[in-house]
Amino acid sequence: MNFNRYLLLLLGLIVGCGGSATSPGPGGPSGEASADRWHNELFTYAIDNLNRLEQFDTGEMVREIAMRLERSARGVRSDDALMETWPQPEMLRQIVNRLNQWIRVQKPPKPWRPDPIVESLPKPLRELPLVEGLGKLEFCRYDGFALREVVWLRDISNWARGRQLNDLDRAKELFDWTVRNIQLESDTLGNEAPAVEHVPQVPWETIMFGRGTAVERAWVFILLARQQGIDAAMLAVGESLRSWAVGVLVDDELYLFDLALGLPIPAPDGVKLDQSGQFDIRPATLQQVVADEMLLRQLDVDESNPYPVKASDLERVVALVEASPVYLARRMEMIESRLVGKQKMVLSIDATAQAARFAACRHVSGTRLWTLPYETLLRRSQLPPEQVQKRLAALLPFYAMPGSPLRKARMLYINGDFTGTDGATVFYQHCRPANRVLAAAPIHRMEKAVYSRAKQDASYWLGLLAFQRAKYSSAADYFARRVLEASPGGPWTHGAMYNLARTYEASGRDDKAIELYRSDTNSPAYHGNVLRSRYLAAVLAR
Image (tube, rainbow, N blue to C red):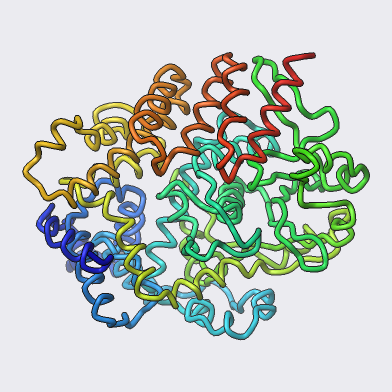
């Protein structure tokens, strides 16, 4: 059976699951309520619900996926090709509608013009609807997803940073979260372009699916740092300006984090045990690496597997500033200006000013707008039908099971709600029926395949949740028994082996950690894993 027919049949089997999302919206203005109060209520309704999307039913999503898949199979293109692979939940649609009602009567607080950095985009990227509409006081469907993405980034950054107060220490924690939570995917064409079969992802997809290429990991890390008020940029090197590492700007120094290795580039004497006895790497600065090539050569595995950056590459280092459309749009700036307290989030940046801060750093030869976010949007608006269908199919495990427990669990984890009767753990467990129960269930084998994938995802993510809570025995059980043994060669093999090694390391079983880091020779992260094992062994031998 070909891919189209498989998915159409599968969706036909499960399209009856769930109901539609419902939530009372604000009523019309009464004779006693002023127009200002009414419009404030529209804004409040939108933002309040944006911050609790996990509470709303999404039963209509399977029907929406089915309709989009059927259109794609018939070769019918959407009037908004960018949105073809992103079915919009009802509550997200309501949020966009309420914001449009609110903004129509707002008076912009000051004269506005697009950030001059936009003019540096190539013409095809400047002509993207989202770029041409930066000054519009009207929210589009994409804006709902962009707002949800920023909420996720804010929430993750607020709990993943730990209790650190220092910007560099916060950045290290956010980097570590990114490496552990986003399984590295192969990038067969090099740093600059995803593999042929890989559909480029925007950050919320990378977070939701928990997998991405090195550059997609970097994009998430940069945006997590932004929510903590930390400037970070992708550094490109050499004449061809190959993407290299993320530079985090702290006290006028650029600290280096390599998302392909999954490691900070170690500073001189930067590999050590911290005060609690845990393995720790202090990142090198760009200035230190330029001054001492041995800081790069320590990243060689052997002569056959050298680190792909040489001292000569650092003669040209360009900081690529992340300024995707959401952070340059006038309407987003207007929202941000009204947010306070726990709802506050970074929705706008002065990209030209940020570029100037990076340009002032030693050994940075120039700055540019990072075009990858714009190229991703362009590519996503031009996907061939088979890739549209695969992206839609990837959403099924989140919505196909009654009540969408995987989707709810994922969002609760992102929010930092781990335990309790309404925590992520409970809903992840709902996705894990016993194999005998699943085998005996009166449903089609194709539907069972979707449920089985949801179970695999939930098992892996329960391991990550346990690790985050320092429940290392439980984390090891999930990674070893419920992922690696239960699904050998499954979708989470590389991530589970890495995180199992991290679990052993955190619980003092260093020999087992070192062995495991070195054993997954087919992992895209193998180079970095070998280096971690080498550094860990060296620290323990001191």
